[in-house]
Image 1: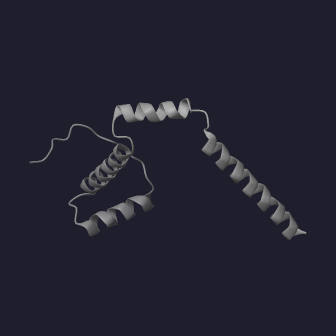
Image 2: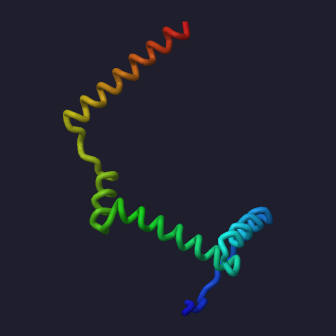
Image 3: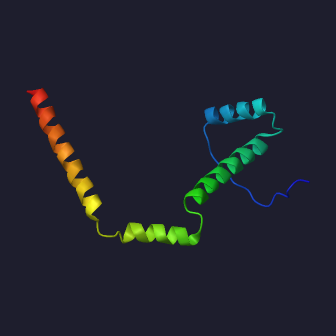
Length: 102
């Protein structure tokens, strides 16, 4: 049983894009270009939603994530040490790069 059509989306694309999509539709065996486009868009939308839900499953997860971004905790000793090591690494490599250039 088909789902009744209730809405419409209008999209303007180049002739080249339309021909490419039409060719892919034919190769895939779809009855119409619209059917192919709806299938592809729905498949991609579901994929995006699934990927998003895997990272932050619940509203509470999303709140915690946003709060951590907006109000980050103070760096602990390990993070401070990692930053110092990184800065030393960068400084050491800048000196080596200047020596090579000379």
